Length: 121
Image (cartoon, rainbow, N blue to C red; front, side):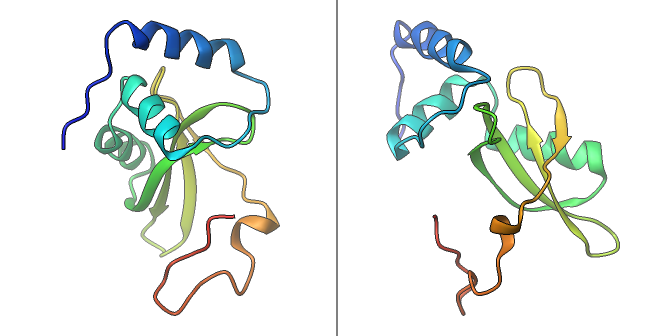
């Protein structure tokens, strides 16, 4: 199903995102994430292409995420030729790609389920 954001809401969404940049934010609801991603000006496919182009690796996972500094964009997990996996943040506003510093909580043992799914904590 195609969803459309009324053009009148896009400037308000962008202004709200810019005003809150750099400040810690509460988690977004699924609807808020969808609206923010659609209003960002970058598709998930474009973010994946950007991250793969910067790193030379292959994307294995991607999604709309908070970079823990209040900025929202795309996190892309990239596998490189040595089979290492690193996470990269793609800023949809300017297309910059930066490596995400993993914390212990990001990959604690026991979070993986047998089917490969992880809990959304």
